Every structure is written in C-alpha cells, then in structure tokens.
Length: 348
Image (cartoon, rainbow, N blue to C red; front, side, top):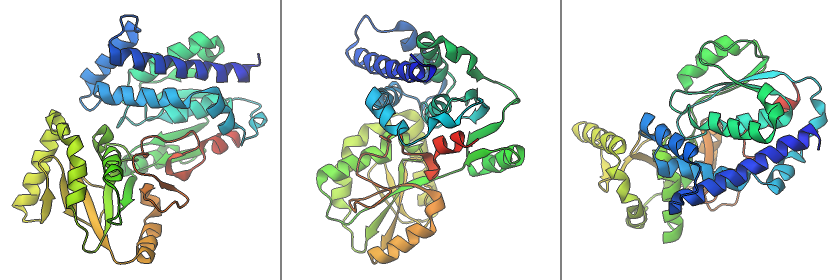
C-alpha cells in the first residue's frame, strides 16, 4: 500500500471509529472507548458551550463523511502528484464549535504536507485524541503532525481562522507567507412565507445547533413584506429546551433586557429574540430579520454582502445555496469562505 493510500485508509478507519463511538455513547454500551468518553466529558467541563450532544453531533457528522467513497470522490478533482517536497503548514484553529479546524487538518495531511497546529484553548482535547488514533493506523503520520502551545515557528504557509479583530493580527504576522486567513462570516436564510412546517423546523437546526456559534449558523432571516411570524414561532418551539442551558439563558436574559431598556421593537418566544436589523451578525439567542420587496433587490443586497456570508439557506436551488437544515452538514468540498483549501495547498 502506498503512503498516500495508507493515509486515506487511516481517515476511513477514523470515520468508522467515530461512528461506532457515537452509537455506543447514545445507548450507553459498556464496550465504549472509555478514554475517548472521558475526553468528551473533559471537553464539556472546560467549555460550557461544548455539550456532549453537540460534541457527538460533530463527531457523528465527521464519521459519515470519512468513508472511502467520499474521500476518493473529493480528491479525484485534484492532481495530488504536485506535492514533491512536504512543507510545514501552520494551522491556527478557532474554538467556537467542536473540531471546527478538522477540515483544514484533513486537507493538509491528504495534500502531503505536514501539520503544525495551534489549538484554541476552547477546544484542545478532541483533535489530539483523533491524531492518536490516526497515528495508530498509520505510524508515518507521527512525523507529519505536531502541536504548539506558544509562538508558532518553522512553518512555510499558514491557515488561520479567527474574528475580524484577530484577522488583522494574522495579516500582520503572517502576511509575508502564503496564507488563508478567515475572519467573521455569518449565514442567512431567505423565507418566502410558503415554507412547510417541516422546513421551518429544519431551519431551527440551522439556527440553534452549537447555540448559533458557528459561521454556518443562520444569524439572520430575510422575509417578504407582510410576513406572518406565527408559523415560524410554532416551528421553533421544538427547540425550547435550549433555554435550560445556563450560558445560553444568560445571553437571552441579557440581550432581551438591553433591547427592552432601549425601547427596541422585538419579537420574543421566551427563548429566542427576533429583532429587525440591517446587520448580519446577531448575538447569541437573537435572530435578526430584514424585509425584502423583491427577489431581485434581495439578490443584489446579498451579492454586496458576499464577503460576509458563509451560507445562504433557501429553496431557490441556486449555486451556493443550502437547503433547510443542512448548514451544519457540509461536504468535503464545502470550503470555508469559498476558498479551495486543497488547491491552495497543492500549489505551494
């Protein structure tokens, strides 16, 4: 087996491992990997946003993606023979949702390069355990993966993900080397008022999964003039238990109080606040909305905001649009910010 095929096989085995772990976790199977279960518990203790449900959701989705067919289909679009001399790629990972930097890690390894990863303090447990499993499948990866706590040095290119503020620092420190630097993005949904109850319930998954902390979470909806909110709120009631998560509840109470004291007009269902707003990025527990007069005008507005939008959820079946309930189920070729990470790596 070639080193390239060995690496693919390692990730395929990882997919099986993740799927098996999640299945056993949900039924409390005694044969579960206790070390991994303890790591999941520690991750939740160290970051209150990383509930076991959300961690397992992320692991389960990666388990579905990492199979032979998916990986080979994805890689078939690239000339993987381009990498002759492996380069060390620094990856600065965000920590807003579990394993948010795993796709960058996957791209670097399968492109033939080496990983030098700086983990977020909010998500420092999960990836090292997955790396331990991968090295067990393919020992040659031991020399291709390293983690760094302090200053990152000795890299030849960098992939960094952070806020608009940290993005400016990344540009300053890493701008002289080949780089992908990602900043804040948000996702939006276009509603027509003709959505079914099931579609609106699915939209709730796009809004509430990971408590809205991901760039693929819908933070704003565009609605036609005269939109009836009643069906929307009826569909959202499925997610009402989210208010029992104390960090979310604290955000809800705070944001609602601020809006009320400022005499802002809001809509509220006791766990989600809707506010009319031109901005895209809404606080946790808040969903912004704007009215549109025509699809043509809305399309122009979205095009003007393209560099701030990660996903557009709609029924329009347009390129780049995502169906209801699918924002947190990206495929291997769904690159953040629309930048082809694999192509970037292969051209270094």
